Image (cartoon, rainbow, N blue to C red; front, side):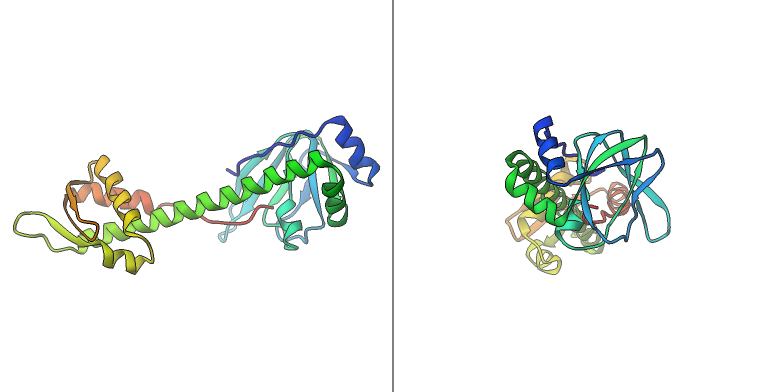
Length: 229
């Protein structure tokens, strides 16, 4: 689920937003706020009720990504980027939300310090979410690459397997240090044992059934990185 970042909008900030021309929209339960693919025309701040964030995948299945509660800013990324909505927002209960178009948003952020701080926190969190997802995707790639390399490696007379980590890292476009960290994690899980390395070549033994099970877990539901609504 998307990390929810709540604002700290007090009554004074609300009055400032309303006096600046921000409108309060009321949505009935089950009413759609905006739909995935719509042109983004404003940012919302939920002040009452709960809303659902959903996304439809390439197979047409709808997935619940998050539930928004009062104080949550949403829809900001598409407005800042002048892009289309990447998710659908539906009112779970009767809701009220402040709406700011791009011009009002910029004016409000520049004149209301508490609002600018809130948006900074939201944007920092969005960036952190995306970074974490990219890191997870990279780690999964390394895990699968190591698994494939182990299965393809020839067993030596000693019963060990030898891998050229530098060559594998080059193939993956990554770092030897990350591959070693993944191997250490695999060692903790009992997948590999007797791990020896010199930061280029590594020797080890591995448990094939556990390796195959590990690769199966890694390959299930690869992470999809999408901007926020």
